[in-house]
Amino acid sequence: MANTKPIGVAYEDQQLDGAVMGKTGGTASFYGLTPIAQAAAITAVTNTASGTELATAINAIRTALKNIGITA
Image 1 (cartoon, helix red, strand yellow):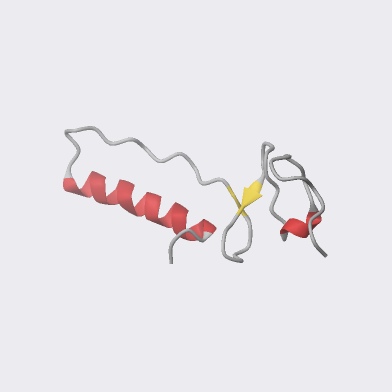
Image 2 (cartoon, one colour):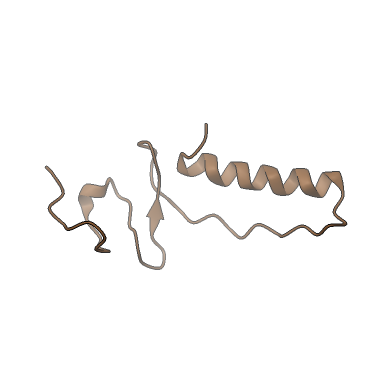
């Protein structure tokens, strides 16, 4: 069944495959993945960070993007 809500209106609709947008505790996903809750905060790195710290931060970002379907 097609969505009948106007574009740009925040709402909770079961036809969004379980995703809940626009409210605390909401979930999201892309490309048909199961909607998940927002990823935990990723620790910011400083300009004095070691290679290991940078790799950890990059891997955390990659994992968060992969979990919601932005990248494979």
